Image (tube, rainbow, N blue to C red; front, top):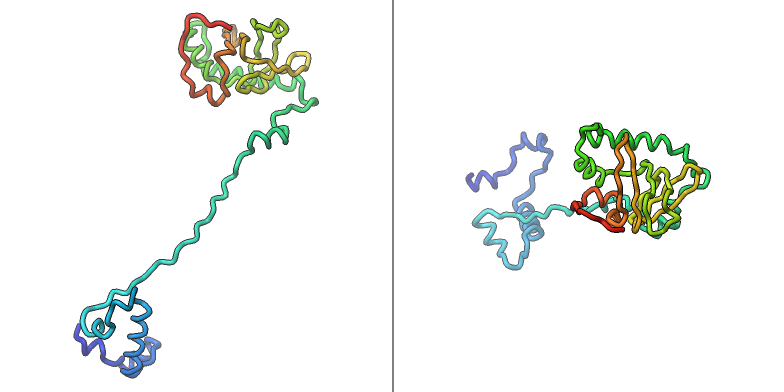
Length: 221
């Protein structure tokens, strides 16, 4: 594009269309120099007159910084807050065996689906491996062996499983806390009886699902 055409005044018929007012050459030159001085980064290193007389000018531009919004992620309660709020405590009026029978029925259906029907022809080792990683909330557990004789024979529906203990509700509406260590539990589903060695079961339910258990010939209390 010719320099004369660039510096030519705006035709009168375009003034109203563009909505601009033509300036004199002196005002236009002053505006250009002021605009370049404010736009060029580090203007001291440049000669404005030399730049205006020769090459095209690349104006610096910085995008406005976007404000980072703090993510409003819900934080869970810590252990101390859970204890203060008594999150894991079952109220006395809710400690009734009959109240949790529907939970046991849901658990029974869940285990049957998990083990492919629990047919008489089912492989006991395959069923046992699936039970090791299953959720036992709602199962009826019975203590068959323990180093503490008072625990033997205790039976009830599992309400809460922690890393080291089972909380069960017995048929006489008593909430019992049974330690896993040094105890053996029996669980029965459709005639299939499985034994849980508590000393090898000291995991939380979520951790146990990802745990790889090794098959051992003999297991001591």
